[in-house]
Amino acid sequence: NSEVPLKPRTDFNPFERMPKADDIADDLACFFGIEIPDAVVDYKRNQVFRAGDFANVVTRLQEAQAQGRGAVATTSLVTVENSWYGIEAGFRCNVTWVYLSRASQWEAQLVSGIKKLVIPKKNPDDPSNTPNHGVLKNFPNFGTFSQLRLKPPQANLLAGLSTWIIHANRELFEAALG
Image 1 (tube, one colour):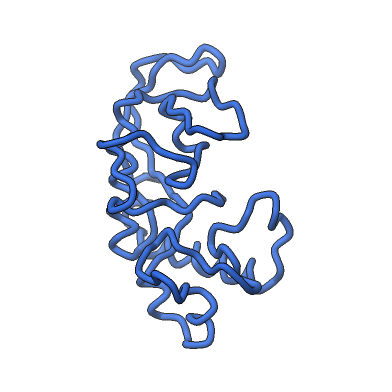
Image 2: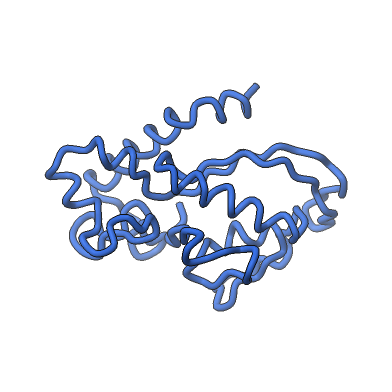
């Protein structure tokens, strides 16, 4: 779970600038050797892909998120050497990325009472905007440390969203699992 919602392309174009702390999770960017300012964890040893591939991965996730089916995308990548983790350079792989995000198609199917709790009143069409109060504050990007113990409504709704995203992107998961 990332507590940082993925910013849409209108707010963060990864081909034009490096990410800031509120654009994307630092634990995804680190796989590409991208350091986000103000990160609280040292991820310097985590790079396994070329920095130049970061923008394409982010763009694919943003495009999927904009379609309302969740931020899920499969990309073909080549590893870079990472002696810390014993990863050799040049390994070609397909990675199916799942970035926890709002899914407007799922939200549209919710009953009105739940919709009011899940869809923010201010900027409801911005997928990086999450509820700012109540039991579903930050949904689905609950704080990893500040909201560590989820209440049943939070956990159940998060499970429902996650299940729906997997079903909505079934073809990607079936291809990934062979």
